[in-house]
Amino acid sequence: MDILNAIESGFTQGIIFYPIVLSLALSYRLLKFPDISIEGTFALGGAAFGVILSNTNSYFVAIPAAMFFAAIAGSVTALLHHYLRINKFLAGIIVITALYSVIVRLIGGSNISLLKFNLSASYLQITYIVASILISLIAYFFYSSKNGIKIRGAAINPTLSKSLGHNTGLLLVIGLAFNNALAALSGVYFSLDAGFSDLKIGQGTLIVALAALAIGERLVPKSKVSILLYIILSAAVGSIFYQILWAFALQLNIQASDLKILSAIIVVTLFVFKRRNETGDEL
Amino acid sequence: MKLAMNYNNTPILSVKDLTVTYNKYGSTVKALDNLSIEPIQQGSWAFLTGSNGSGKSTLFKAITKDITNYSGTIELNGTDIKKISSKRLSELVFLISQNPLACTVDELTVWENLLFATNGTTKEELEESLKQSGLLQHKNHIAKNLSGGQRQLLALQIARLRKVKLLLLDEPFAALDPENADKGLKIIKELQISGTAIFFITHDLELISNTDIEHKKIVLFGNDKI
Image (tube, rainbow over all chains, first blue to last red; front, side):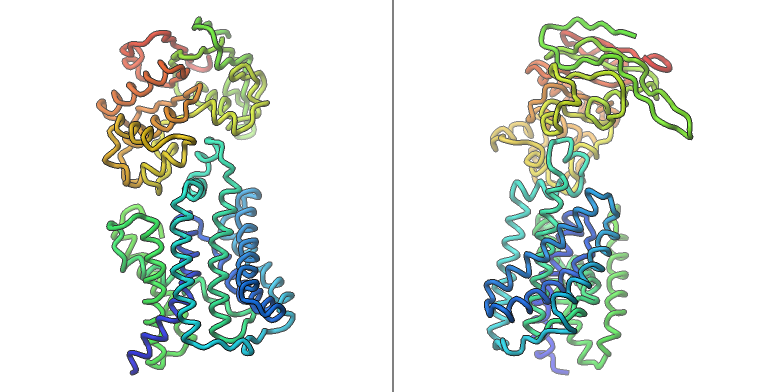
């Protein structure tokens, strides 16, 4: 087994999936909104990025545009839940389903190749790391600002938020838009790394993100840092650690398709273990 | 039925011919039947007491517009509350219920809870309010880790910092020990002195008789209705 190779490739994959793990962690843990639409916005991010890059040849247009479209999709999840009173999970399922059609329309075929934009692996790795540090800082300062605190409060206790005169619906929309834009960034990273984008790249990303978060939450000491920092660190550490484990598993010739069930087992085991250790916490 | 309360000048709240009905198992139940309360003035204190189910909390829900399907009128600061926007209502009224979880946000720290619920307050004002309620050392603790009593004190500080005209208290001390209840009462008295009208639901007759304040009035809800 090539340990160094497994660590290196696991680290790179960990950085690629970090934004979607962070997106899940911010929605699920910080806003108490289990937003499953991120699986769709991950794919939307990759597809929109691929199409726009192919047409404009500009990363500076394609990346923000992909994140913007994902933010719109995240807003729809929030609107469905807040204004139409649709259950959080159901709102996510509806958005994922709708995004399937959107992505097919967007790509106009089964996939879109990005091989002509062949960037060197080391350049991409450095870009991913710098961008990941940047989004961590943005997420930290965004959610610890006065408006970020209002978003968190509105998502957790909407009744109180409303009685304080806040526009609770708008605050939730902003929160989920921000978080889904992060998920799209992961889709962009993934498409760049893989050299293509298609409809299926999002499949299974939710369980990967959940497993990574579950691992991260076990590794980062909760009592030492603020809840926001704990969530961001858990997402980062969990994403990298999980992908390194995945890389080792692949070197042991475990089939990639079997890793999904391993991820599911990891999520259940770690979350149940967490619940038994921390009274009152839900899964 | 009419209840007379003679306070000083500026009226904050008046309730006229308020009837609230709701459907229960197919039949119509009157939660409040033609209730009228003469104006509650600025800086006054009214205790509201009576049996369970007599409509006390329903009255509060109507004042905060959680219930909008009623007949009669509720006026706040001289304006029918149906014509007051939610934002304006939130500037005039704050409700603290008996549930300590309702008026604070679990996952925010004590400090963040104050930032969440107040506008235009300085850091010094926030620190002073925490010092006053003995919560300064818990500034960076999340509200979930506070006791029920501490959370109610935090909610009272939020009401104080928001400078509301009317504070509705629905058995806020039900889960508090005597020490925290005393602290809470002190904050409420300060609010009253600064001009806030206090409307306080309680079953604690001792609290009513022992509360040494000016302009104290008692509204008694009967066994069934007012």
